[in-house]
Length: 577
Image (cartoon, one colour):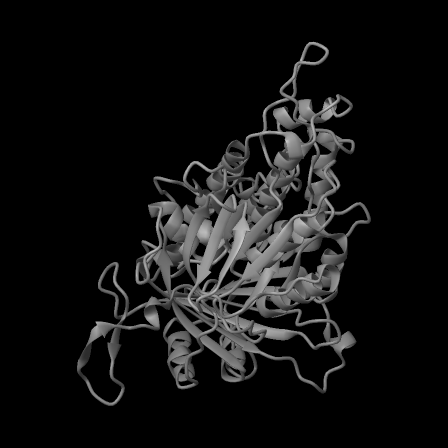
């Protein structure tokens, strides 16, 4: 009865909204918001996409830029003679989704900017290469809308390598009785079957009838998950495939590639060169740069500088607290004998609620002409949890407890450090969890047993509050370090938002830098015709980027933290998720 009531509430909520508010992209939590609702976590609004997750990242002009551009015909001083200099060279530290997308955003033509000068990009990564086989499957919604704003060609490449997200099915273990198939396998109770494509279209139509859309350039422009041609922007793709596409297109379209094996160990402003010099552990120094962007994840060196004003070799830039929740994910590659065209059907997310565990299965695009992969996620509580500490190491051949905490456990969340795989021996432990939790059906177990890649990691919570925020100036030089992606807002993976938030960060940050360069180009301190142009202020624009992104990402982080414990509830109260 409780589940039925929750489903009716969910359907009613789904009719409320499909586009985002002015200056926003739609939420990327399509699947997860539905799951939260049926899970019993009553939301203030649970529309698809959820308005709580709406991201304020559109390419809007601030009031200062609007007045600046409205006076673009005013005679201005040349940038070379102005007291303010444009951002011309940027160092991006980290080549994950945030870093690669940001490089595209800086190098792609900016349709809203009158400044046609390209920004020079250097992108560095501490790894020796990018492993396409690392990582899990992800969903792309609001982040893909942002990617389309960056580059339509890039958007098309990603879509052609993805699967459309079509359906959602939710099941739970029976409270009583059973629902076994002919083979005697418990199939569980079905709580919900939702056509995601139709739900998004209906929400978009209802919202459009109220707001009528906005004309190009209007400050009330809406960004919807439904494009003008009727396409619903909701897809699944392997994280490694998305990363490969971003890197390949960066080289093909812009002639820029990642500089690998570059671990940042120092940053300092150079008066002689009027820019920031970056030093790496191989002894090389690059620069000068006008802006350094930290896209280097949870152990971000740039974040360490933003927080402390210095870089220490062995310092931990994070303040993570172990949640006591583990997440296992397995990827089963598509069969090479399958016809890629026939196999590439729409994706269905199937979620299973067990006793003390939650599981999810789906298929994910693996590239053009490549059969899709299957993915399974299992979230469960750590039996060896002693509070906010990493899981202890138990020697498999002995019964004694090791002194030091597990390095693997401290290696963080599945969406953050996905290069470290665990031995296949862990499959048996995973199957045991499935049986103990009474996860319905054999879908999860089949993917886990036949997986090509297998990962098990601890889930950590990161404090979104910091004294210095995401921006720090180098020695009052008007040169800045700024954060994006997980370096700025590492969040638990339970809402499936990490990649989407990184893409939206990249878009808005580039827009703010372009906006500053426009201000510099048009700036005139001389009053002409009774008014002067607004004085350029890069710090204010970077702070605006942080302000727009901090609240929605912090909201997602807080909700994801609570959702993890809700998903792994057990006993009597676990039935009311």
